[in-house]
Image 1 (tube, rainbow, N blue to C red):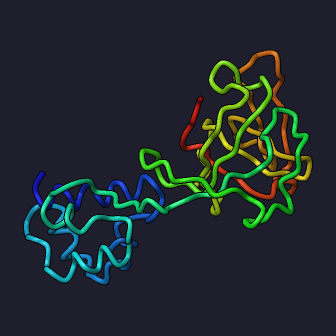
Image 2 (image 1 turned 60 degrees about the vertical axis):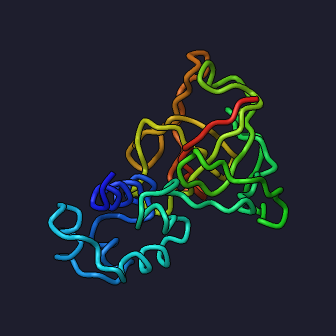
Length: 207
């Protein structure tokens, strides 16, 4: 992989995992200019030496050795990196309440390096998402802070006034339509004002 290809791979990774919205944000994060980054990604120039340091300062999980020399892996995740495991079950019907749970109340577990970026994990229960998700599975979730980043048709963990649910979600005119994989569980709609947070499921652990 050439230097230019590594930079293209890096920018694609940052976009896919929502570290950046677009190429312009990358330009700003690494303190460069639009022309330099465009020419670099198109293979017309080599990276200025200062850019390597700026990239690794902006995104400390990126390996300098990989970016500069192509050695090792792109991601540099320290052994001590952890994410909180929320000590509540996500359920089909919403019997548990997430509101009020603090970081201090959560167990810290090692990051799974093969997953995309995520903010926490949570074990689930119930049968509404069979056969895709089973009781006892642990899902890795990315907090979605911008409604424009919601991905309709994908599985999300929702923290609501009635509790936690894990469903495929769709827009429904002021509400969110929640859909199960298991046909025995009917769809239902949650008003958007009753949803505290949206969390995209990006990984699954099954023991």
